[in-house]
Length: 295
Image (cartoon, rainbow, N blue to C red; front, side, top):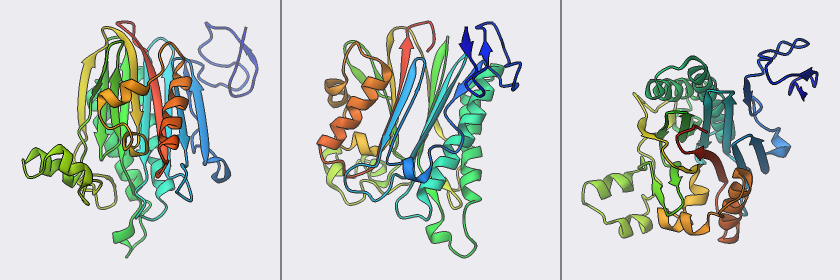
């Protein structure tokens, strides 16, 4: 017998709802609202097949990153990572509202079998609106804002969406690939041929966002990519607190431990960033891909 995660009543694997409290047993997710303020410095969440670790880092006074993820039994998983923009007000509140709002939309899509890219767009726009409502009148220049990266994984495929410079990487047995392109002024200049990749890494505009979530975002849609899950591997979502130290796919692949659980992978990647200096908040969510069998 299993137990209900809400009230601890005994339930069976076949039960869809808890008879005592009514909880939907087919859906498991991280807590709405995330950790309390005193617990944000180091956060770990684990569900079957996926896990996440978020750390304040060594230099920042508080952790302004947030993560949320969940799974629908027999259907798939969804995850979101958001990085609060440090120059905005209540950045940690912005990122937490964004991940909670987006995850609700994505898990609803997993349950209903909705189109993943449409759901990803709806999740980002809903999160954008929710963050926008946090803004104070007359304080638009410091309105709460954050970046966004999400994943929706089913038996057939995985869809990744993003706004800003939080990233997603696909890690397989022989290498890794970056799935996202940063929404930053420096990345835009590289795309236009004004800067080289090497110049962009040291340019003062390297982390100036060209797109974000928040009151002044004017967001119409996130960028998105869908791919078939044909071989076993890992899907890694992360904030720039990690990828600043391992920016290229080969850099990430070199430090991903092999043959361990998602939470052990997430812990190791956070530790890599901390040992390299930990100048920013670090958040890593790892989803196990089973190769043609979803997550």
